[in-house]
Length: 294
Length: 252
Image (cartoon, rainbow over all chains, first blue to last red; front, side, top):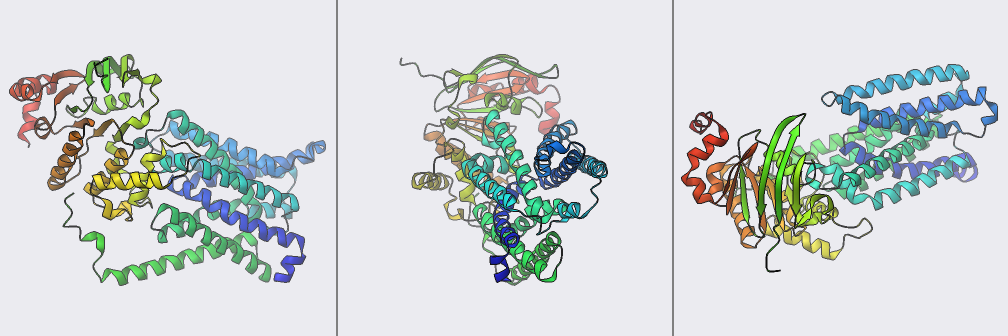
């Protein structure tokens, strides 16, 4: 296996890209989960799919546009979709969540129409849907690298406003413009991450990669910084483990990664419950605060 | 030059939601180091007034000045510490420690490229000590009691070293013992010459502590000395709360 990785180009790219995605996804995922935007990421990944389908259709009917990779159109659609979701949510402030199914259904509808236009019900499409090792080229690898740099730069530079907005918007006294700028940047970055992750785990499993490692991290972390650290460790384990297993047994890459992530999630929950029930037999420190005045 | 600029100054401020007037012709000021209590029934526009002062809402008429500067030009947001009503019901599952929450109070005044260093950490510890929560620094915020969380949020406001502290209904959902501790804490900050604007519907407790009482219901029904307020209490309250007030008080 190791020899294969060193010798076969696409495998090497797949692994390196996977390792980078294992950093990108949880870093952005932490903010997505804590801002309660998990479903929005799902909506955006489906919009990305319709963008890709549109790109495939475009290539068929306007062949001189061959240089436009469908992948970039997917990215564009994903951003457009996120900018649709927010104003729609504001229209129905009390039933915000139903905006997501509207976007999801429309995005899938659009995708299917474009795919049929492109006559692309084939193996390539399967790769976009569920991820594939073979689709990772040298260019894709470079794109992931660039996105990694952008994401890390963004989170490091905007860490403070991001954390404030995530924790509580009202009590933070941030200027409205600062909040809007951070919000728009954040949405665009999510679209970027969605499109890039799509290449490895596939459209339908992108949001899982952003959410499941963070869900595990939150179970174990005691502070906000620890959430990042644990989530990245879990994501790396899921992705590298998933890649190895899927290569070894010739399973679908995306599916294997997500199933592994889920199984690990269950194990983490189980371990935590066991630890809790053991420590519950001893007095817990924070429940014996009688001496504190306030 | 000897005249001190008021910390906060409102002149003929009016505000309406969808043409329905919420605030009419509000005039008052807060001097440096002054402790002002703002009382009024539910729906009297207290929170709206606070939002206008913080620049979260824009007044339809009149002017708000902070430290002598019109609100639109006021940039020193770090001079204001704010503990919102919502702090009571924030996302309590948030995986952050007490230390991290208090640190966030500094974030909004720091430039994004500035590193959170030793100096900043020291400030956070000082704020935690002021509210007596230094032993809880590493605890998860969601695991504290309501009163302890309230203290942490006050520390988050204090860490900026503000000149004006605005507290919106801080004792809601906090037991009586914690409430006393809270007023002790506020009093000690008042002694340190911090200007405080405390919003509450608990009239009895407030009038015994503050320098100045504001009684709000759409407009200011009383503005001035708490002793005077106590003497004419029934009149002012009937004026502000309407005839239903008697009913309200009997419930207590």
